[in-house]
Length: 154
Image (cartoon, one colour):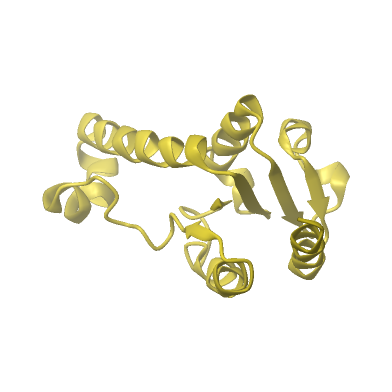
Protein backbone atom coordinates (compact mmCIF):
# COMPACT_ATOMS: atom_id res chain seq x y z
CA UNK A 1 0.00 0.00 0.00
CA UNK A 2 1.26 3.45 -0.94
CA UNK A 3 0.03 6.49 0.98
CA UNK A 4 0.57 10.07 -0.17
CA UNK A 5 0.82 12.73 2.55
CA UNK A 6 -0.97 15.87 1.31
CA UNK A 7 -1.02 19.23 3.05
CA UNK A 8 0.51 22.67 3.09
CA UNK A 9 4.20 23.01 2.35
CA UNK A 10 4.80 26.38 0.70
CA UNK A 11 3.03 28.52 3.33
CA UNK A 12 3.35 26.28 6.40
CA UNK A 13 5.85 27.61 8.96
CA UNK A 14 7.70 24.27 9.11
CA UNK A 15 7.01 23.47 5.43
CA UNK A 16 4.57 20.79 6.60
CA UNK A 17 7.26 18.57 8.04
CA UNK A 18 6.19 18.05 11.68
CA UNK A 19 2.85 16.28 11.17
CA UNK A 20 4.29 14.17 8.37
CA UNK A 21 7.23 13.06 10.53
CA UNK A 22 4.83 12.16 13.33
CA UNK A 23 2.43 10.03 11.23
CA UNK A 24 5.02 8.32 9.00
CA UNK A 25 6.35 5.81 11.58
CA UNK A 26 2.78 4.66 12.31
CA UNK A 27 1.93 4.21 8.63
CA UNK A 28 5.25 2.58 7.75
CA UNK A 29 6.10 0.52 10.83
CA UNK A 30 2.71 -0.29 12.29
CA UNK A 31 0.71 -0.72 9.08
CA UNK A 32 3.55 -1.71 6.77
CA UNK A 33 2.59 0.92 4.18
CA UNK A 34 4.99 2.74 1.90
CA UNK A 35 4.81 6.51 2.55
CA UNK A 36 5.50 9.31 0.11
CA UNK A 37 6.24 12.58 1.88
CA UNK A 38 6.50 15.45 -0.62
CA UNK A 39 7.91 17.76 2.07
CA UNK A 40 10.95 15.52 2.53
CA UNK A 41 11.46 14.96 -1.19
CA UNK A 42 12.66 18.43 -2.17
CA UNK A 43 14.74 17.10 -5.05
CA UNK A 44 11.86 15.47 -6.93
CA UNK A 45 12.83 15.58 -10.61
CA UNK A 46 14.63 18.92 -10.39
CA UNK A 47 18.13 19.66 -11.58
CA UNK A 48 20.66 21.15 -9.14
CA UNK A 49 20.20 24.55 -10.79
CA UNK A 50 16.41 24.39 -10.52
CA UNK A 51 16.58 23.34 -6.88
CA UNK A 52 19.05 26.14 -6.05
CA UNK A 53 17.20 28.94 -7.85
CA UNK A 54 13.51 28.06 -7.57
CA UNK A 55 12.61 30.62 -4.87
CA UNK A 56 14.65 33.39 -6.55
CA UNK A 57 13.06 32.73 -9.94
CA UNK A 58 9.60 33.37 -8.48
CA UNK A 59 10.64 37.03 -8.21
CA UNK A 60 13.10 37.54 -11.05
CA UNK A 61 12.27 34.95 -13.76
CA UNK A 62 8.62 33.98 -13.62
CA UNK A 63 8.69 31.87 -16.79
CA UNK A 64 11.51 29.73 -15.43
CA UNK A 65 9.78 29.49 -12.07
CA UNK A 66 6.56 28.30 -13.72
CA UNK A 67 8.37 25.71 -15.81
CA UNK A 68 10.13 24.35 -12.74
CA UNK A 69 6.99 24.25 -10.59
CA UNK A 70 5.20 22.44 -13.42
CA UNK A 71 7.80 19.69 -13.10
CA UNK A 72 7.00 19.46 -9.38
CA UNK A 73 3.26 19.38 -10.11
CA UNK A 74 3.67 16.57 -12.66
CA UNK A 75 5.93 14.61 -10.31
CA UNK A 76 3.62 14.87 -7.29
CA UNK A 77 0.40 14.22 -9.20
CA UNK A 78 1.92 11.13 -10.76
CA UNK A 79 2.56 9.76 -7.28
CA UNK A 80 -0.95 10.70 -6.10
CA UNK A 81 -2.41 8.82 -9.06
CA UNK A 82 -0.45 5.68 -8.10
CA UNK A 83 -1.33 5.89 -4.40
CA UNK A 84 -3.73 3.56 -2.61
CA UNK A 85 -4.94 6.38 -0.38
CA UNK A 86 -4.15 9.96 0.62
CA UNK A 87 -3.80 11.33 4.13
CA UNK A 88 -4.33 15.08 4.20
CA UNK A 89 -3.70 17.50 7.04
CA UNK A 90 -5.99 20.42 6.21
CA UNK A 91 -5.24 23.65 8.07
CA UNK A 92 -5.26 27.39 7.50
CA UNK A 93 -2.01 27.18 5.53
CA UNK A 94 -3.66 24.95 2.91
CA UNK A 95 -6.08 27.76 2.13
CA UNK A 96 -3.20 29.96 0.94
CA UNK A 97 -1.97 27.53 -1.71
CA UNK A 98 -3.48 25.39 -4.43
CA UNK A 99 -1.43 22.19 -4.49
CA UNK A 100 -3.26 20.32 -1.77
CA UNK A 101 -6.66 21.02 -3.34
CA UNK A 102 -5.35 19.80 -6.69
CA UNK A 103 -3.98 16.59 -5.13
CA UNK A 104 -7.29 15.87 -3.39
CA UNK A 105 -9.22 16.58 -6.58
CA UNK A 106 -7.10 14.16 -8.59
CA UNK A 107 -7.42 11.49 -5.90
CA UNK A 108 -11.20 11.92 -5.83
CA UNK A 109 -11.43 11.80 -9.62
CA UNK A 110 -9.38 8.58 -9.69
CA UNK A 111 -11.38 6.94 -6.89
CA UNK A 112 -8.48 7.04 -4.43
CA UNK A 113 -9.68 7.39 -0.81
CA UNK A 114 -8.83 10.71 0.84
CA UNK A 115 -8.65 10.79 4.63
CA UNK A 116 -8.84 14.42 5.72
CA UNK A 117 -7.61 15.39 9.17
CA UNK A 118 -8.62 18.88 10.24
CA UNK A 119 -9.20 20.77 13.44
CA UNK A 120 -10.94 23.54 11.54
CA UNK A 121 -14.72 23.79 11.90
CA UNK A 122 -16.32 22.05 8.91
CA UNK A 123 -18.05 25.28 7.86
CA UNK A 124 -14.60 26.88 7.38
CA UNK A 125 -13.31 24.09 5.12
CA UNK A 126 -13.87 24.49 1.39
CA UNK A 127 -16.88 22.57 0.11
CA UNK A 128 -14.69 21.30 -2.74
CA UNK A 129 -12.21 19.84 -0.28
CA UNK A 130 -14.96 18.27 1.81
CA UNK A 131 -16.47 16.71 -1.31
CA UNK A 132 -13.12 15.21 -2.32
CA UNK A 133 -12.71 13.63 1.11
CA UNK A 134 -13.76 10.04 1.76
CA UNK A 135 -13.63 10.42 5.56
CA UNK A 136 -13.02 13.41 7.82
CA UNK A 137 -11.23 13.12 11.16
CA UNK A 138 -10.79 15.66 13.96
CA UNK A 139 -7.38 14.25 14.93
CA UNK A 140 -4.62 11.97 13.78
CA UNK A 141 -5.49 9.67 16.68
CA UNK A 142 -8.96 9.15 15.17
CA UNK A 143 -7.40 8.45 11.77
CA UNK A 144 -4.94 5.95 13.25
CA UNK A 145 -7.77 4.15 15.06
CA UNK A 146 -9.73 3.95 11.80
CA UNK A 147 -6.73 2.60 9.87
CA UNK A 148 -5.92 0.05 12.57
CA UNK A 149 -9.53 -1.11 12.62
CA UNK A 150 -9.41 -1.60 8.86
CA UNK A 151 -6.18 -3.59 9.18
CA UNK A 152 -7.73 -5.83 11.84
CA UNK A 153 -10.65 -6.56 9.51
CA UNK A 154 -8.42 -7.34 6.53
